[in-house]
Image (tube, rainbow, N blue to C red; front, top):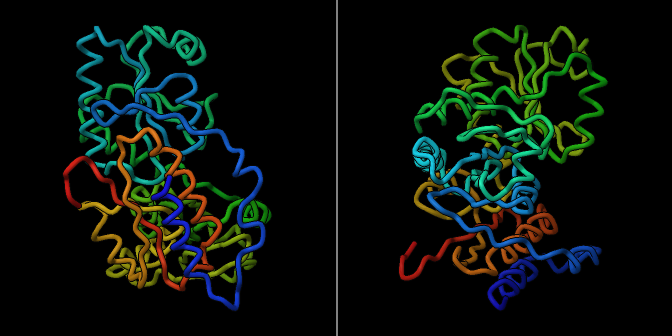
Amino acid sequence: MELLWGSLLLVAACVPAAQGWPEDHVKDADLDMPQPLHLVEEGNLKVLTAAGLTQMLNQTRFLMVLFHNPSSKQSRKLAKELGKAVEIVGKNKNGVGFGRVDITVEKELCKEFDIEKAPELKLFFEGNRTEPINCEGVVEAAALVVWLRRQISQKAFLFTDTEQVAEFVKTRPLVIIGFFQDLEEEAAELFFDVIKDFPELTFGVMSISNAFGRFHVILDSVLVFSKGNIVNRQELINDSTNKNVLNQVIKPHLTGFVIEYNTENKGLIYELQVMNHMLLFASKRARSFAMIMQHYKLAVKEFQNKVCEGTILLWGSWMGSRDL
């Protein structure tokens, strides 16, 4: 844990002196939090027990779970393809997780989710275990990625009146909503296409005709709400630049997450144009890794918008003698 507290001390050292230490910077509940389970990973998939599934549901917005039978050739093949899909999506991508459940062992989970045969693939959204989405007839890695990204874009919340919007944005720290003249036109389709790559963020859409001028939206626009307040608005007026505009609106809000520093994410991290980075080196193989990450992510919540302006918390995975 020495490494962990060293990183937190770095965070504390960056708090401006005039501001002081944030109030209640360490909650009693945080000190008493249960130690997270160490989940074994095989073929890019977390091996899930009942407790492990609950933990993963609490940690990810989208969780793709394969219910499989190790003795089944079909199960082994689908597990391999799903593992390849993880590589395409990006390992340790915020907001999405992948796991597998052995139906010969986890009988209670099979009963809960009505699993009668294997393999069966289900997608869970925002911790809801009562209405998982079945992924049927998709067996190749590339197709699995296409299916998953489509589900992510379709999970943008559809608002039909302004009161829904006003209440919803108060319940989430950040919501990005697209307002469009026609939800089936080109600008709206582009919005849905772009957001599929950001499973960690919450999105919504609304027809401008239903806004009745409440948010002062006339043209196709994207509004960013933070704790109920509009903090950014951008009109989408040029088909040739709208995609870049959307990415410029969305990507800065990824700094609220701990991002793994690796070859896949390096470009994104530099693209965010963050001036200061805090980097934690930790071994994924260590049994203490889950606890270290849990505390490190707490640092994000405690010090977001308080630590040295333009600072992002990162973590680098250390695997044996491999260098980043």
